[in-house]
Image (cartoon, rainbow, N blue to C red; front, side, top):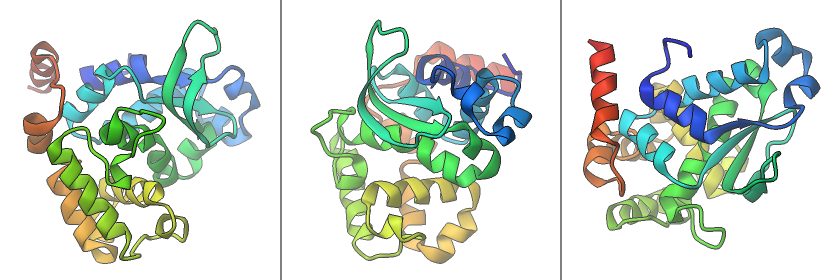
Length: 226
C-alpha cells in the first residue's frame, strides 16, 4: 500500500472504493497511460478523498452504505448496485469515470463526494433526503442541511448544473473548498464559511458525527505522522 495513504485512507480504499469489471480495459488512453491498473485509479481516488478530515474518513469507512465505483464512462448515481460477484448489493453508489481522475481533478472529486452527502442526509436511504436536500442524520447535521438548501436557493452555484441541483451545488462547492478555497470564498462566501465550520472541520466531526472513529485507528495515524 502506498506510504502516502494514511491508515484511514487505506480503510476507505478497501471498504468503499471499487473498480467495475473491465473498467480499466475500456477506459480511454489517458487513464491507461496514467494508471497501470484499475487499482492504481482506486488509490488515486483514496488520495483525493484524503483531503477530508481524518474523522470524516473513518466515519465514512465504518458506514454500511456509501460506495464509489470506478468505471470506464458511467458517471451516474445508484441507490443500489449489485456488485460484480453478485454476492451482495451495495447501497448508495457513485460511479466515477477513471478518465476524470486524470483530466479533471475537481470534477472527479465532486463526483466522488456524492455518497458522503447521501450518508449524512439519511444514511443512503433510497427514499430519504440528502444533506444537500436539507436532511441530516442528527440534529446538528440537520441544521447544516437546512443552511445548505437555503444557500442553494440564492443561486450562487459555480456551474449551471449546480444552480439547478442541490446535490451538484454541494458536491462542486465541497470539491472547490478542498482544492481552491479562495475561489469558493470569492464566488460563494457563505457556503465557504459553512463548509469549513462543518464538513471540513475536524472539531465538528469529532464532536457531532453520529459514529466515531475507533481510537486505535486515530492513534495509529498520529503515531505515523510523528
